[in-house]
Image 1 (cartoon, rainbow, N blue to C red):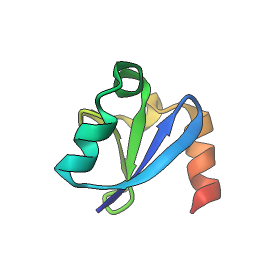
Image 2 (spheres, helix red, strand yellow):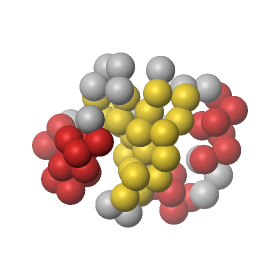
Image 3 (tube, rainbow, N blue to C red):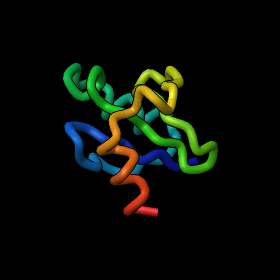
Length: 70
């Protein structure tokens, strides 16, 4: 399963759902606290600690960017 990671209003990268990948990108506390991950398979938004985020709580800029990417 792939995740699109957004940080600071930009696409940070696309990552596979492996523990090694998540542990490497979670070391930066600023990124960890401010990034959103979008599951392409589930079509849901998450924080980097995999806490689900309501659709209304996701910044509109990120939703618009996601529409442009898909």
